[in-house]
Length: 415
Ligand SMILES: *Cc1c(COP(=O)(O)O)cnc(C)c1O
Image 1 (cartoon, rainbow, N blue to C red):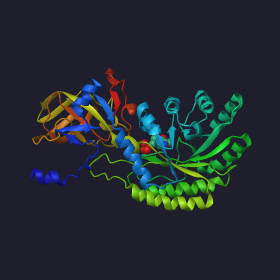
Image 2: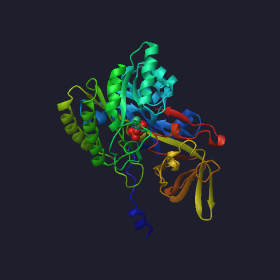
Image 3: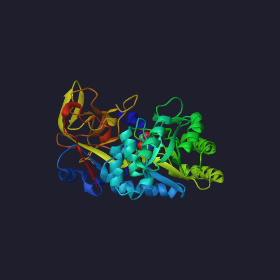
Image 4: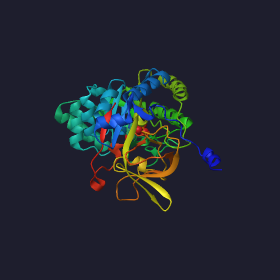
């Protein structure tokens, strides 16, 4: 009976990046217990550089050769991760001067760095102009500010217009384009803005059109890319010069939950190469850029916690860990999700454990929001064992309220 019921549940796709050795999960060939000793304390995030590299290689293999690949730093701004990626991607996209500092430290050519985000202050614009990065302008007012600050500095600012498209990316985990938005300039206002841009003499680099995040539907992604390229083509007619670059966003998702299916890079690449061919008939010299965060790093990271207590409450077993939502808000279901679902989890030092039990995994915060796993069937675990959450390389630590409840922040390690 129970076996049958278990079989019916859609399973999570197997996690292949962290192979077992002597019953323990490994990161970059290091057993989890040894890595914990090396880091010196739990909880911690560990990212595997070989997995990140493998993902980029896979993208190069299947996506069109003339497509430029940018890393969106928001997904994981750890300096060592950004440094590693800076050597294997074509550019960095960022959304704050904090991220800009990390990006510039990598040695990446500022012309290959772009700065988006609504509400850039004069100070931030000033820094960006002095740095020579491309500014993705989010409003006409911002453009006037850039023009004035650039004149004061005696520099020519490199600018792109972030366009809020007149369509949506369907089936996105987070929509960031289409309809009314705080992001970008509505497509219908862009021709006027381009006219003004020419008057101001700004260096027009191109368009940035980002419509959504965490999307696993290939048809939706390709449909949005097709509309994005068509929109960029038609807006280009109003521009002072042909765009040098068109950033078509990204939005490729990763599987988090049972039943989620990974996207096929081959299908996406095949589709996109047809779209690019058509685009280049009108704009042969315009580079097309895709910007991805989660897809590059999300599956390369784990969050490791230790079990501090184990107790039974009215028939339910609770594993109480030293981690929680203050380090990993997304896994607790409070980062924009409508319903909480379990991230894939393992008892990192008991992979082979055959005796299983159903447990609830929680953090150490004094709030019922602090849940890391509900009713999961896992090898029987005890105090001192490691609870590991997979798919944690993106929107983990930097997207979590570390100050909440005043516990120490976790460490991060790139292995
Ligand atoms: C958040 C964001 C990204 C990255 O999205 P992912 O889903 O992590 O790939 C890219 N571009 C912009 C403008 C963003 O705001």
